[in-house]
Amino acid sequence: MGKAKKALAAIDEPPADPKAEAVRQTDMAVREIELRYGPGRLLAACPDLALAEKMRRQMQLYNDAVYGGSAADTQVQAQGLIKGYQALERAFLQAGGQPLDHSAVIETELDDGAVLAIVPDITQYSPKPGETREVLAIGAGAVAEMFDKRTRETLAAVSRHWPGAHIESARRKPLEDEIPF
Image (cartoon, rainbow, N blue to C red; front, side, top):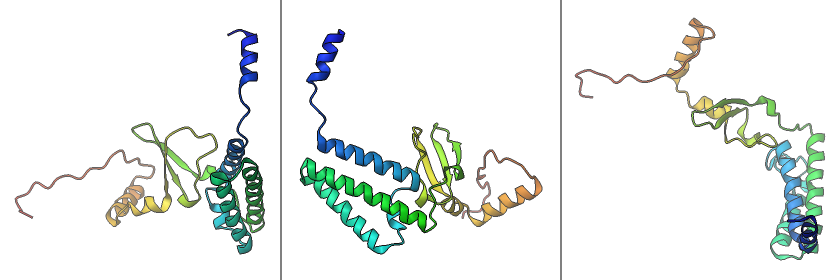
């Protein structure tokens, strides 16, 4: 396609839907906040109950505008939602809250190429911005629950006797005796 035709094609394209654009921009802003603090964390940890309630109302107003309101109403409520998240962020930080620490994640590659991420607290985990890999995240507490007492004792004994040892695999040996139980 020639330069003239490309220029004409660009002129003929309809302008972006203002409602869809407001939703897109709001989604991007909320996603950025959730990557920094974790999904729902600012609202859940808000020390100001009145602010939290006000934010819940604003979220409802925004959703009502998106699904049933005009483009202008959606734009107004979208701005209100973004301002609400900014207020939650200020309150969270003033109360001593901290953004997520992505450096506290332990990662290893699984056999299928996916990544296992062990995190201190799964409720505060959010993938790194721009993450494109398939990531299976699990909290450290859930990992601890996977080890029964015998496994923990075995791992402790191995660590004591052979510091720095690496367990490559473990399998249970089937019993080969005559006892029928």
